[in-house]
Length: 396
Image 1 (cartoon, helix red, strand yellow):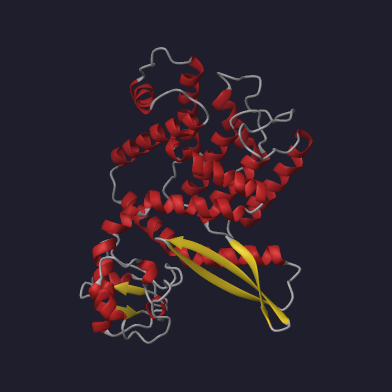
Image 2 (tube, rainbow, N blue to C red; image 1 turned 180 degrees about the vertical axis):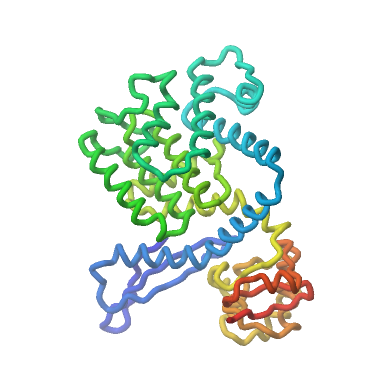
């Protein structure tokens, strides 16, 4: 996370912003100098610094995932698209309901939603809410307009009208607590104003920030307001997927097995009032969920802004001497974080020195690129791995 650090040199104190990331047992750090005095707008600077790190490290991977997803969808028969969406609807419904206490297993959920088989000796409200969630999910997918309070109230009503009709589609009028959490949701008198702020924030930022970050923040902000007596988590996850779908990104499921890290990220972000905690968690979860397609199917590997700072001890100059020998000795154990800064900046041109890195990336990520793929790459400063094993600079 982003923290303020100070260093004393003689009689003077210098302030920095510092962000640390643990990668395979090694802590990577990035710093931003603030000056000899701590700025008054330190919170704003911290957010800006974190956003820069996020963009540098993750956005190229997210864009590659989107590009592959769109291409795959364009070439997929309609019947197969429907089948994949139905499969996701079952898994998403199972996990989102299970997180909230449903007793249905994945098999029971699938039998119920796909075959109409009602599980025996299971609470009727679990069955009805699973069916309702599936229906709301498809309503969300089909909805063409933008996010609004009216549509969210409608989704909430559909979700709970058969099990909790007294609160379905209605904002809460009482204080609620989240079991096991240190976070206390706002009082009922604050909800209207907070929802106004939420939609004002959404409409002013929906074209300004990255879609994955927008989805994460919308989820976090809405569940923090906690406007309903029940169903806040499920509606927040539907909002998240509405934004992903609207921006042509693959949908995201939060598995029941990952609920502890999910709840921890939410609670820490809420208690510390640091949105970046949850944003970072969700982006990592998203890349873990969808990034596997890049290992076997991505043709062009983009590097310079997609990797963090180099590991301690690796070359930190534009001189690549010595790097080739290291990659030759251990070409299959280095990861992207170990690439020297010269590769990240797109300046390495020497075919011999770059071959070890290229071979590692091809082995580990399954990445290769033909001349045709190279020609289709964006004409910006990006590094691609060619089938010949060379690294080329595509500066415009």
